[in-house]
Image (cartoon, each protein chain N blue to C red):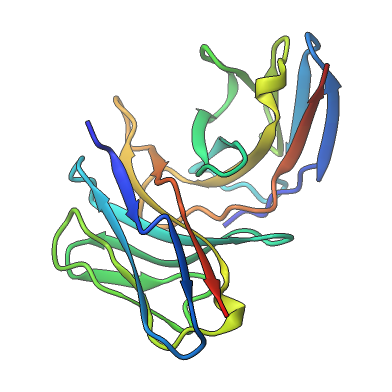
Length: 116
Length: 111
């Protein structure tokens, strides 16, 4: 049971380059999320997706693009990376808890991105 | 979404019970209270969720008073491995509205 995976785990890039972070989940969860985590800010939601081909902005979407052509994949693209996008990026997916409609989010291991 | 307030950090000795309180004065009728735990260099993981009164699982207990304006996460007899950041989240039961993670409470367990 692979769960939710992210790749690459570590990435160094330069300002202005395009970078794509991959997220893959094996549970067929309908909801998927992208967060960034920076010191002093906690986790901030970038984008989320309720299902394939349905995406919506979160708290900090500027500079990022997402797509969801398949339920299991939710890639995050930095179209032109900036130093301020240096961060740890977490992908998550969610499923209702058994017995009711509450949901719990399962997080991937994270991608550490450094933009020089 | 209801805003939450929790202490920035807490210290505890091994073997002690730790209680982390979260305030959520504007909680809505259909909101649930959820706690996540995040170890260094890992993604957060769900630990407990509740709506009212008390919920207990193998990891923690969650106490919610009748007015639901606050909640307390209780960790029994903590060990060094419980050192982590604990997040309190409040939101509706469905997945239509994403949960908002605040800065959490950084718990440091000391030997």
